Amino acid sequence: MVARCSTDWEDAPGVAAQAIAVSERAVALAQSDGRAWDAALLALRDAEATETRGDAKRDFALERKLEAAAAAPLEIASLAADIAALAAVAGENCEGTYRADAAAAAALAAGGAAAAAHLVRVNLGIRAADPRLTHALASEQAARDVADRLGDAAR
Image (cartoon, rainbow, N blue to C red):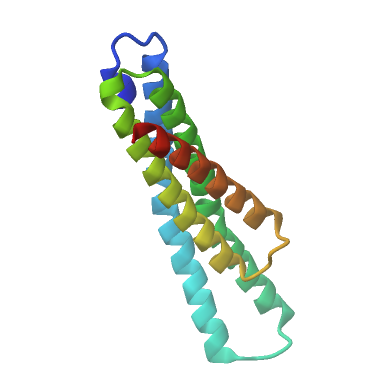
């Protein structure tokens, strides 16, 4: 919205198009995330119900489903960082009337990145050294940094 409303900014249409593309990808990921989590939840319930120790094949299948359930939130965290970066560009180049809206977009993106990083952590189990978790947390931090910067500037 910020880019669409900034008529004097030459790159605004491109930024608006990027934001729409990211938004469409996020919607698709949210839908696939639900399906992946449903499959992981069924596998978890099955594992709890059978409790056969030493079944490496079952354990591997469950691990794969949990990793699949972490894939969409991981990409959503990255997209949220992208949206925050777009909000920063918009906030720096838009008409002054819309700077608070750019800051709000960055704050929402930071919240989305934090939620997604949390889901990555949960779905992967607690493995602090996992590079996927590291990536999700870096995306969360990048979005938060932009949100903080824009929020301070909008005050």
